[in-house]
Image 1 (cartoon, helix red, strand yellow):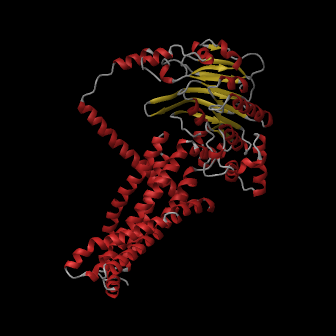
Image 2: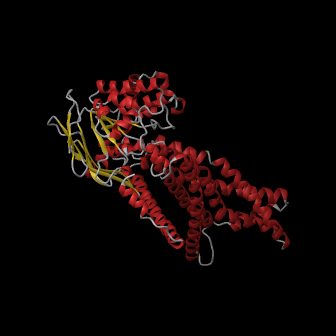
Image 3: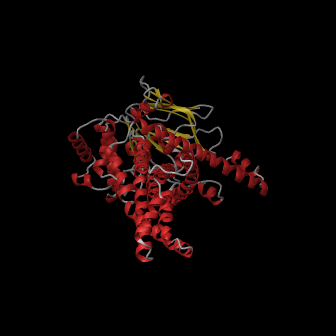
Length: 297
Length: 287
């Protein structure tokens, strides 16, 4: 089954193929090889199938939002991209190189080409904000403390944090400030890909929009590819030029693909799949009945 | 709910008590073997880092301070009390047979061979092991360990190696402190409170403790230190989610460390005794 899911407004994604095996294949319009590619990726924890046969490609420079309800495997997929979670089956390719073929040091070097913004920022409690932001720099390069100081302050300023914040501990910061420190830390090595895990979760609407603007600003400032895992539809619509919707494997039929939608944000409202429209509109639908019977999630 | 899921639910039959019992035991055995395997791999990775690239001085010194300097007062205090308790417990029996002055030999020998190392290790397991598991567990739960990996740092190199080094290098000092303060405590109670003759007490004390005893206690402590570091770090790294998971990691780190310390102590005591009687068949010492 084929469906055209992107608009004609210049998006790189032109066509999404749903094969008989329930695999979604994304084709890029240009000849460039994808920067990130997942081939038949499955992740199983104990008896629980979290991801099954995920196939997708992310082109260089694209901002992809991965949406889906809690437990659908979007964070696991994102961690799989960086090699934090090993796929049970299938492979992840970054810039044409399979992560599974890489030795320890090569994988470490590849990881440094990613910037990772964690859900709760994952700042090191035992370090000051300055030390947190400087950490990747000190780990990867031999640089003088003057350069470290200069770059840390520059990146803190770029995310709108004053100099005095640099000497505070993460515990002294608000949620929004922690996220911004996390972003500064992710960007300090000038990564090719920035991965955001729930960047606006737990923030007020104003601070959420500040983070959205920072994501857009980062894209304007650096030529990065971004992967944003979120269930905030405002964020997905605002920052992404392509949206993927994952669905919990346990609630799908055997032959259904776990990626229910792959296309531009503008097509979300009119998606063919009822479950996509329900998610976008925030409607519980048959989930209420399922929960009442205690059958799932 | 999908048809396949419905058929899955309907096809399930209630298990008999015996099948459940076999399942539980089987699962416990598999879990135990898996944990031992995991812990061995964890230790192997740590040792590989230890012999290839040491962590930076700043990281190591922080852990040395946490493990060594901050444990010193509590080890000294408990050592003192244990020395005094030994005097209190042994005095009545020794007094009854007129061997009061030999109390020092018994107290000091017990402290140097067994109680000093085990006490220092127990205090370290409680104070440092639990804290290590809690800190690393919190780092696991809050994705700080994932963040380290994502930034190209190896969590075992960065977090475990410094803690391991601090434990194995500083536990001998803590053991010596526990021994010394126990001896002081025992002397204080025996001589000052119970009125045992000072010179006789010291003479017998010196005769009762050999250099090999001291060496044996310190040697064992290094194994206790490595046990505490590996068990605590492993529990922290494999912490279950949530506050309950962190609490459980801290508790099990202490319990497992304590049980393993005693098991290792038994094994090493047998080995050290065999070595001692091989080197000194007549029980002589190198002093």
